[in-house]
Structures are given as structure tokens and as C-alpha cells.
Length: 347
Image (tube, rainbow, N blue to C red; front, side, top):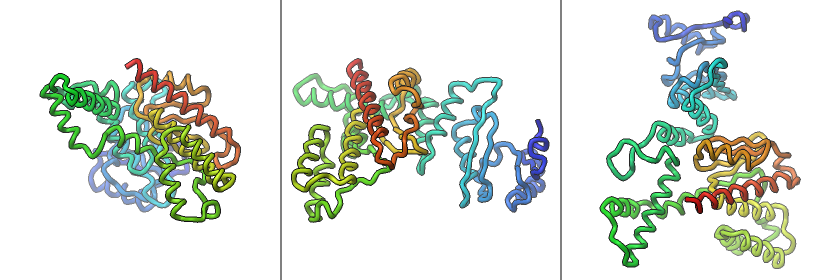
């Protein structure tokens, strides 16, 4: 079906690489100035064009494009003040290839500012990376994901170094090189990864000044709570606050809940928790297709699992006092922590 038949009132323009350069320039000028409503074109527009008035992009057969192409195409809209939309369609007569589906899934996950780095890392995993230790152009990174691979490597190096310190067998040349490289890293890799957990829930979380008037004391309590790494210690801290300063106000209860979520997220391997359109969104380390299906079963109906994110079933207003969504979030994190512990034991 032709575009003229679908939208007869729209002014159409066509742009592709085979056009004469003057004709192509004329069409693009008309589109930029708003004299053309719909521009039908090839991927030629991915080349860094700045068209602020373009607010909708539709890509046909998006699964046949490369990940970098899709990222550049998506960047052609949303460059002005108006909210923009990008729609990526596949052929209804043929299913996308696994690689094509992964590219679209990656792009749907990476929507925040600074998403380019995450897309580049995912592209590295999909294309395949060589061994970190060695000269081979293929390795095991694609099987487990870059983040998990580096974490496993760091753990193995630390274990071997500890054995050597206790008088064990000397390190091989390869492991010694890895250990030297690990020493140059800014701090412990695993600790760095676990400390980067971001919890951004739509609730006010603080210790109010009218609850703890002394600012220095309030800061000391903040520091103490920030260094609490298990639920029992956090519960004890909450009881102590209630005994010293009276019943906890709602924002203080929210603070303890948020810290509790962060503790469980650390055990579950979750790197970030936030909310989007009434859903709680968990960002995880990359998981394989089998793990995605298993997690989907464990999380129950209404949840959606992708390579790097988990969307919980739509919950009640997160800003409301209804605790149902909080109970759901804690239950999901405990399930994920159990799965993570089982995977660690089996490994």
C-alpha cells in the first residue's frame, strides 16, 4: 500500500543516495523548513543530520540494520523541544534472526542518557571478543557476558594470589600477568561493581530535620546506615532510631526500605532499580536466553524479562501509601538472590 493512499493529506518527499546532489539538497531543505510532512528515505539520514522539527521515526525491517545504524537512526529524532518517538518494525511474514532480535532488544533497553556506552558493550558481546589473556580472536566472553567475565576473572586472580601468599604453587606466566593487571585497576573490581547499585524509587527518603535536629548527628546516622550491609543490622538500626527519637516518620521509613532494597539488590546481582510508566524496572547483568525464560517463570505473570532488564507487572501508584508494590519488589529480589546463590553453588 502506497503512502499516498495511507496519508493522502500529507506532503511527501523522497531521499536516497542515488538522487542528484542538487535534488537531494532541495528535498532535505524543504523537509527541514517544514514544507514536507513525511520524508520517505533510505538509511542515508543516519549520517549526523540535525533536523529539530522531526519528531517521529519509522524504520521498516529494522532487524536487518546493524546496532550502530539503529542507534544513529534513533538519534535523528528528539533533537528539538518536542517529545519524539522512534518505531522499529519487523517483517510480519518472517521472524527476525536471533541476532536481529538482540539488536532491537538492546536498543529498547538503552534509552537513558549515556546509553551509547551500554550499546557499545552489548555490540562487543554480540560480535564476539577475543580472549583477554592471549592472542586468540575468540573466547568465552560471549557465553557469559563481558561484565560477568571480568568479575569471574578478577575472583580467580584474587584466589590464586591468596594461594601463592599462603605458600601454594607459583603462578603461571599468564596468571601472573593477569594479577599484575588486576593490581593496576582502581580498587577491587567486584567491590566497584557492587557499589555502583543505583536505587531510584519514586518515594521521599530522608531523615527530616524536625526528627533529628542536630545536623552532625544526622550526618553520622546517614553514614552508619550507608555502611549497613545486611537486613538484620538495618532492622536493628531502625529500632534504635525509634527508641532514641520516637516513631519513624514516613520519609525515614522510606529511607530504610530503600536501603533494604539495595542490600537485596546486591545479593541478587541487580545494578539499578527505578520506575517507568507505573512499572518497577530492574537492571541486571546480561543473562542468557535460558536464564531469561527461567526468570520469567520465577517472577510470575505480568513480568517481562530482557537481556539486561526486568519489568515487574504494572503496580499501583508507586507514590501512594499502598505497600503492595513494595512487597512485590522485595519478593522478586529475594527470588533473584536465591537464583544467584544457586548458580554460584552449581558453578
